[in-house]
Amino acid sequence: MFKQAELVKTVFSPGDYPPRLGVEFSFAGRSNVGKSTLLNVLLGVRIAHVSGTPGKTGSVNFYKVDGRFYFVDLPGYGYARRSRVELERWRVLVEDYFAERYEVSFPIVLIDIRHPLQKADITMLDFLRARELPFVTVLTKSDKLSASQLKKMLSVHEKQVLDYGAVAVFPVSAISGKGISELKREISSILGSYSVDRR
Ligand SMILES: Nc1nc2c(ncn2[C@@H]2O[C@H](COP(=O)(O)OP(=O)(O)O)[C@@H](O)[C@H]2O)c(=O)[nH]1
Ligand SMILES: [Mg+2]
Image (cartoon, rainbow, N blue to C red; front, side, top):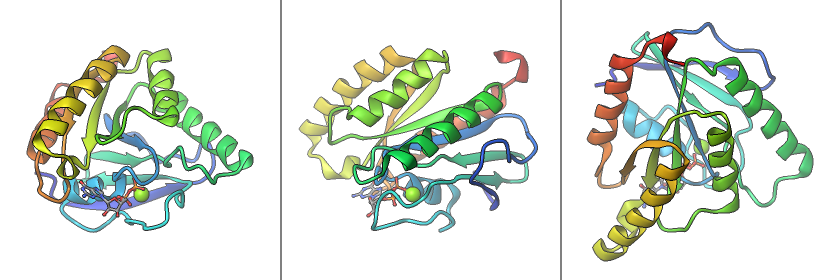
């Protein structure tokens, strides 16, 4: 479905963005939630760096997909051992990104399905709700739960994120591939229906 991808820009400072292409999908989540892994699975290539050590990437990475839209990899949040200065850098960069790309950015928020919402998840969800930004939620690592736990956590998360403004929720596993084609279909459908005048 997504055939070709290239990293076109790694942004460390506010304002330094590539030209708009129309809609872009901005992936957000706590560090270690599985963001790089999901990007690689969606794109079918090992393009995003999967890290054993959380909290490494402090940049906004723009992947151009099939020459026509971006997947934007936002810096991960919630890494406990991050300094105040780094946290502030994160906030400034992410706030600037959404201020600059408000009209074109469609957030995809990743949450680890195994755990209830963490403080950092809630900060991100509050941020999106305050800006009235609709978003898609991806619940990662579904392979780590039993069928009954999965059902329970899915309903817990669904209830909360729909309240925050999620338009759809997808439990996925990068290991089994479960939920990936449904997520791809959602992304394609947003691409198809998107108009810059929407907001
Ligand atoms: N079991 C399982 N592990 C996953 C899944 N997605 C990611 N991981 C693992 O979680 C860890 C963090 O993944 P990474 O993609 O680097 O997370 P990021 O920090 O959010 O970019 C790695 O060890 C991945 O192999 C998944 O769906 N299932
Ligand atoms: Mg990563």
